[in-house]
Image (cartoon, rainbow, N blue to C red; front, top):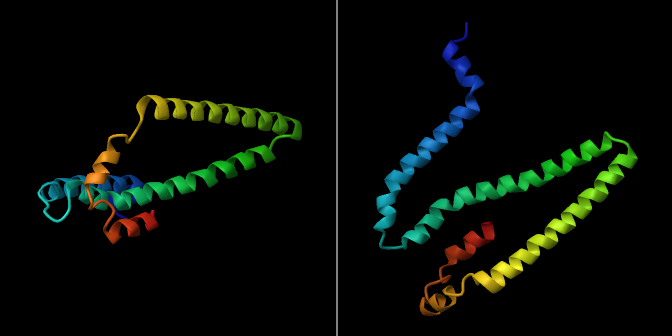
Length: 145
């Protein structure tokens, strides 16, 4: 008695909602682009930050969910194997984590601090721009992040 169209929609609801979100994002982007580029109250960079804020919150919430899922899946997997195998896997994982952290930290210090020197040019720009960070909206957005 149910309509075949609604059956297809119900089976593919997540896909259709994601597709709708992508289309809505494209349409809003095309519509707001001209308004953002010719804004007189805020710079285009500031408006892009305001428009992108909900997406940034969404991505941060997704990242917040990933870690508990991974930890619970590892704990569940470890409870299904015997103690000796779990101890061996745990030792290997700890050594792997420590070695990778040491390599990543060393690379970050060497490349970031010595070779690339990020934000070296921005220090001078911030001294010349008194408006940076003066609005309370920046403090509110930073608290919500």
